[in-house]
Image (cartoon, rainbow, N blue to C red; front, side):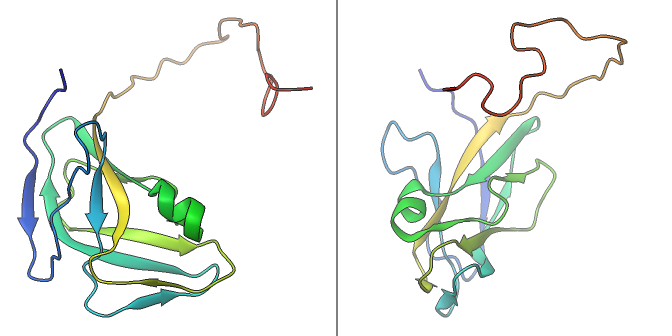
Length: 149
């Protein structure tokens, strides 16, 4: 059974639509562009797109803003910071930093689904300084060390 939490949302005057899960099995809800006019991103250009909402996360939760896979694959549109984290104490408008990684212009229209937002629990680490770390089979093998040779 899926765990549910209460997410308080303040709808700003320019909000187009509240975030929405598209299916019962969706892990993240879509965020909608709330820009008043069209925003055209040239290749490699970035823009901060408003969503028209503010949120209040429960204590010990974060919201992760992630790219929409369809936009990334079909249009080359991603997030400028890969995955954005919204901390529980942030109360400003949720905005999405989009980047156009394609070679074509891309226009963001009011109401477009531009990103997805996943709500997740936060675990904080207590750092323990040690002289030596435990050994593993991989050890210091880096990028590609477990892949095809």
